[in-house]
Structure formats: structure tokens, C-alpha cells
Length: 334
Image (cartoon, rainbow, N blue to C red; front, side):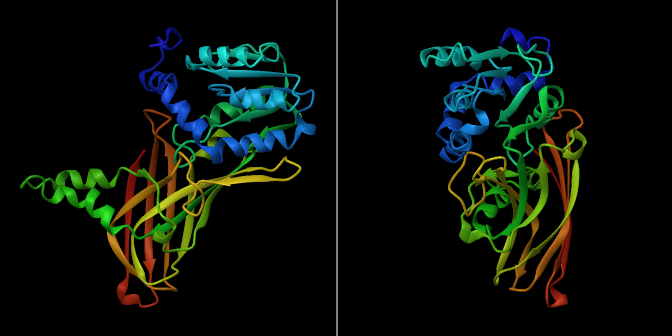
């Protein structure tokens, strides 16, 4: 384990340690939707970056820092807790940018920046279900302490969506498996399996309802307390089918750009490493066009590990034919 992680509580050390490894950075860099969106937001807005001091929160391999230098930034400070920053320093050096980029290893809340204030904050902070293991709290700390009045944040808006899907084959494989395990009844583990959301790619044809937004974050105004939230939802059914699960994804916006840039992690969009988050429900809903699924989604950080999430979904099925009514309440842990 990295010496800087010694003495840190286990869950936090595990989180930062996971970013020491080459593979996770390779996956993120190869995610073209993610990386090209950031590149375009920066390169297409050189007038915003020219001669500015930029802070890259959770800089990783420093790709965003180097984009900012290419766009004309006066200086970029990259901060990351994991030891990947040692490789980032080598990468910055071989690309001839060591005089323009200062890389600091440590927690954002503890490092000493070489500038008292910054003009722009850039960060790729999003996790699965937008908030799982996310570093948004850290970005907000940096915003409140270092960003100049009317400074810019890239990206600055995030929207979380919910929809219903048909996924009987995989649900049977994941949940039904416990009914007969080599001839034994393993149903005590069935409920446990239901409480664990699945991060996977969902095909657009599986989506049975219209999507609905359940959370919108404005990074200029959002507070850490807002990240524990509850949201009502209403999903309008598009066609006759079954609903086995609800899925969530998020869209990200760079609204400060001359030409606004957005990318989505939804099933209608090109693949991203975030995929979608699938919440299986115990019921199988038989639905028809015009039916509705309404409910409440509650989310809060886990009390023992703030990077994990406790999610509760309560729903009511509102069919055009009231004899087909069903509902339930399910708690999930990410």
C-alpha cells in the first residue's frame, strides 16, 4: 500500500488504492465518449482557458491537465491521492509540460496549492449511479475554497434518469439461480441478490417506459448535503411488455462552453465505462401502453462507508385496468 494511505481508514485506503492500478486508467482513457467530451469542451473553448490557472481535481494520469495546457492555460495544478500521479509526472515530462503543470499527491482537503485561487476547476468525478464512490464532495470543497468569484467548473451540470426495462432472461439467471443450486434450495440468498444493483449495459430495445429525471445537480450551487436525496418518479409505459427492473443513468453537461457539450451514459447512447445501473424488483409487472409506474427513490451515503450508497425504491404500479395492481419497496446497497 502507498505510504500516504497508511493510517487512513480501510474503506478510504481501498478506494484510493484502487486508482493506483494501470487498468482502471486504461479503461477510462479508452472511453471515447468520456474523454473526447472533455477534450472538446476544453479545446473548443480556448478563449476561456487562455492564460487561466486551472485546478484538475482527481487528475489521475493528467489527460485533462494536458488538454488545458494545450488550450492555453497559464498553469494547471493536478491533485490526486493515488500513486498513479508518479506516472502522471513522467507523462507530463515526456510531453514537455512540466513547467506548466504542477502535480500534487494528497487529499484535496490537505494539500497546499501553489496559487491561492484558481479560475477554472476541471474534474471527472462521476461514479456508477452518478454518486457511487464519487468525489463530488471533494470538488465542492475545492470550489468553495479555491474558485475565484464567477470562476468556471467543467462540467457543471449532471442529471440522473430512471426508466423501466424488460430483462426476464438475465433476471432469471441472476435471481432465479438461487432456487436450485446443485439440487439445494438457496433462496435465503435470493433476497440478498435482489439488494445488489447490477452495473451492466442495457440494450435500448429493453427499455419499456419513458425515462424521467430524478436528480439534477448544478455544480455552482449544490451542497454536500444535497447528495442525500429523495425523489418521486412517474414512468409512462410505452408498449405491451414486462418490467423486471428499473435502470438509472446520467447525462453530463458543460454549459459554460461557447457551444454547449453534453454526453449521456444511457442505453440510447454510445458505450461508456459507467454503463447503466440495474435495480431488479421481485415482482414481474405485466404492462401495457398507457400504464404508469410511480414511486419514490431515496439515496444516502452508507453510514459506515460514505463512498457506498444505500438506495431505497418504493413503487406502485398504476395500470389502466385496476385489477392488475402491484407495488413494493426494495432496499439496495452499492
